[in-house]
Image 1: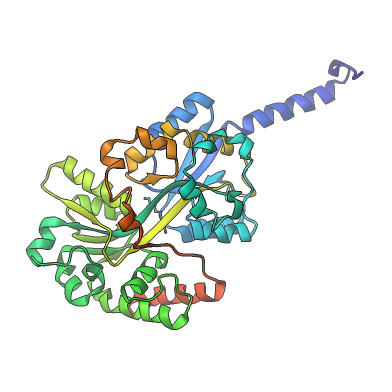
Image 2: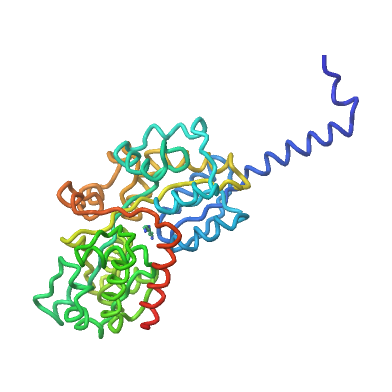
Length: 365
Ligand code: SPD
């Protein structure tokens, strides 16, 4: 039989302190997610129910996430990188395996999406899809029509044909500030493999991007939502839900700005952003609780209804607004899905070439 702890005051104090520490540990979860990617009421509901405070930081590209997680000591408990980055982070040992017994709401995961993700995370051991979407472009209907009544608005020619895009330079053209979107889109436009690892092909894509560089006002991955909505720019390569949020904000403002999102007929990127837990996450229990809460159908639906991105939760679909589940820009039909491409992570040698090519495109050198 164990002696009562009251006979060992120091041991009792140490135990009490460590229990208190463990409890305190789980009262916060540090979440690092894409900007404009959550309904804050869902975060508040999580805290109200669990007592766990959510410290929420945002980013707008995968490169910064990967750099932080590879360096270690980020302090984050839950992060939402895209699939190729998840694959690289797993390989580097930067992620911990999920304890699926702590995420019972995983039963709601959408098998079609989980299967896609298993190509990056074999056995789906490290990542759970949060949202998925496409990368196309958004445009201001009136401003584009004014400048080019017969503009090829369904085509990447809007961006990659210098004759076309030059007509819109005066009303503002933005490109996402990331090679992981623009190089594949340019490769695809050139009828090359968007996931090419060939140096010569990547250089070709960079060459095309350089021809349109003079007409690009800014490389940006977050401000374009408001810039489109306010009518400050007329064309932007962007993520599906971001452009749809811009359209919504424009309509709400009632200033006559109409924004249209396009998945071009030549095809576009389809991507998946997943919850992961870094291997050195300070609050792994809170991280699992957070992911589980986000995987409730009600939470997933609330988030998608708010940010206009499709989620990886099958059960949530009956809770989505009709203008979300019924919008082919958010949940594309099979015909569109057939022209969507996915990309994989590059080996380091190819990644260096991509990074250098992108730097040259941006600097115009
Ligand atoms: N504002 C949310 C944007 C989410 C974009 N994630 C997709 C990145 C794929 N490369």
